[in-house]
Image 1 (cartoon, rainbow, N blue to C red):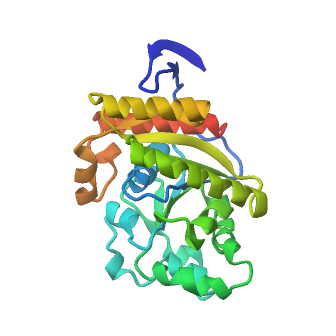
Image 2: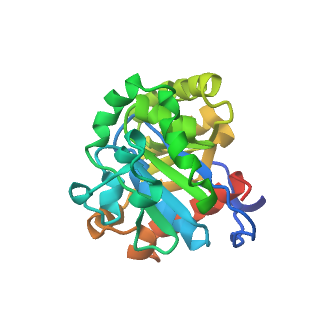
Length: 284
């Protein structure tokens, strides 16, 4: 990567991220990425939606998996969880449906959704008695790898069986981290869980990066938190930082990503930069 000579918000020289090339011809094999943090309200869903939309802008075919019983990702893309006839819950616990019976197209070209609703909360209990229960989502997504370039999983804010399923099914994990001190405390627990999954269930799992979210450069507090994260995790921290803005809550109400709702906004530009950084890190 070429150094731009600019010091970025993480305190490191900001590299120049080249414009992504269109995906090459040939058979697809999706890169699967989980958005994971057991703390709620750190920007997991916002990042899943907007990173997915930014990747789709580059010509990638993207599937977003709503793996949170609250169904926030589904709502954020205009899907009403209460009106779903079937959801990812049915794929986990029934052989009656195929993934294509459940997948919903979004309003963004190249961006599809596997929606969720409150039914998924029962899956955690029902999966306990299943053989190879940690592999259930892996079996569902393995049927879809040839249809997409990226599959992004929006995990629930917990480290329970659903999140273990997501990590077991993934190639990479992104950890969104709100730029405040209480959020720092949960990262150690999350990295310990990731290590256990690597040891016991998915040795190929890698940390793609830690993403600073809800960053406000005007506050010393946020700058100090980001500095500490970089000191602790070094190059595992993305150069891209997602700043706090009123536009993100507005996009949820609108049911569309920021890349279409406010295409020229700093928030949209940040997620486009993150998409370029993700493509580089995944060597895509």
